[in-house]
Image: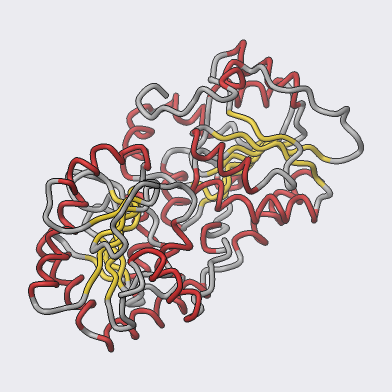
Length: 406
């Protein structure tokens, strides 16, 4: 909290001091929890469906200040209340439970907090871990913990893994198969902005100025982590050195890194502009840094080729490639994609994305795609077809929840 900042607003929520809620009516009250921006975006369509199908009222909690702001901005009408998740200590958790009094819990991906789960048991409330996944790191940690892991992982009423690989990992950790249903990845059901040529051209001019041409290529760094901006800057220079008309769009995973990124780009000869810099005078920048939150999907539509962040060493795990691939943006990943191992492998199998095994390999793939129109078109079509085939996770998830609580 101290490192990332921005937590002053409503910090009392973390101690379990929540605003009072209306008296419970006949409606089912669901307490949903999603950590940050990506999870908030992914869970929204599910919550809309639960509200409609089960006549439920939704209390949504989140962990990060960016996730909280997005939920407040976009989901007020959907939710009975939006709050920070209480620190997982018995006093804070019990206090929050006494106010919310849920009839069911919906937890996103890997949010298994022992005291929260204990309160669910005390109050006899069913718990659903949706879009559940185990990264390589999490799987190794749970495996080492042995019986402690089994105690925690067996507490949910149902675990709904996002892939068959994740399901098998839960089984190997000792979770009863009857608790497990592979429902697919909710992020594949999240609505993606359509790419309309007129809107795309307007966005490209908004970012890079009126002088940008239709054939100018935009290389996107999607949710980048430290050192990856330097790498993309080198790729940009290599491409430009071949005579290519190109621009670089950087969307860092954490907007609060803007100071370190300003230090980086101010030392370079290329012109640049930050999205939050109201005093910026550069109207036609070569590099645009979108240091905001919640705009990734919209800004991605401006790109011709995308690189997925957190996928080059020393970073590990990878950010989600689903949005870029689903929108038909030709996408390249680095070697470190363990957080999305099965999805990335499926994408590679269907030639819906490409993966480099080293920095030089990623660089070669990016420049090749920027140069070759036919390659981009094939990858774009394959990506959209792959994404369409993955949909249906929301319906399957709602079916499991409805069956368990009816």
